[in-house]
Length: 351
Image: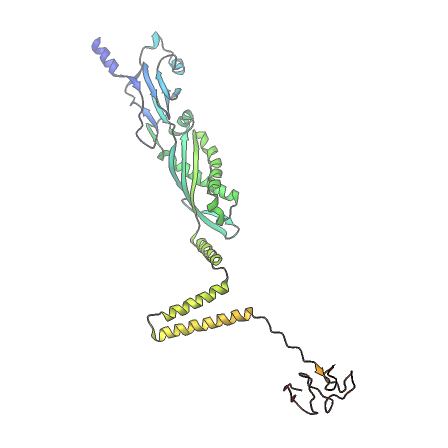
């Protein structure tokens, strides 16, 4: 009997625990199925773990963090399934799954293909984006039913592909919904992440998972759009185009003067720069110059009384004196002009 008891006890398990030394294991099935669990065995469930007992294909009991002695008091569902007699001292076979409930962080996501977007400034453009996210198992029982089943090991790589596709789809919807211009996307990464979380969470809750964070690290634009943005930025930096053109012309002249090649090449460059500079300066001066006012015609004066008379008058309206030898006065200075003279002898004004 002693030998038989030793064999039986060797086939029984009296301590059940799982020490996780990995970073990506989500589910671990305890034991290899060759041994039976003793009634009264010690079960240790650590923080960030949950233990699920499965009996004959059915979930019997779920244990949260703590230390348990397996007996009829803390395993009521298992007891009802077994309906054991004789004090429940016999060992029993059951599968035990340890589910990791901690956060799985620094999970990377990215767009495999560009996402189409309609922008008010650039029209239809293609976007690429990437970032990180974190998730955890929120319902171990539901996760067992819907995701990992009876696998001995289940890691983040088994669910990563599904989560990435859901994330990219949710982000595309978020960008289309918020209608943020392409030039303002970089300042709205946090808002886009929150919108994406709101869309992702309802899609993964049915399998017992919860998204704890979603971060947009970068949204890249096509090369053509980036060049257009660079040109627009350069225009804003330049400011006054006329002054910038003058500065560029001066720089060209300096470069031509310092050209080590010398000879006809340097001379040609210098002449070209000088012509450009001359043209720029003339245009600038013409643009800034105001049209000069035409001088008013000088008034005519009576040689007798000195009062003003109208140009071409033959007699002074004030004293009646005859104006000029033949009734002519200069329209420029008012001096008397002889009949037939083409120019004023005093000021040279054409008559």
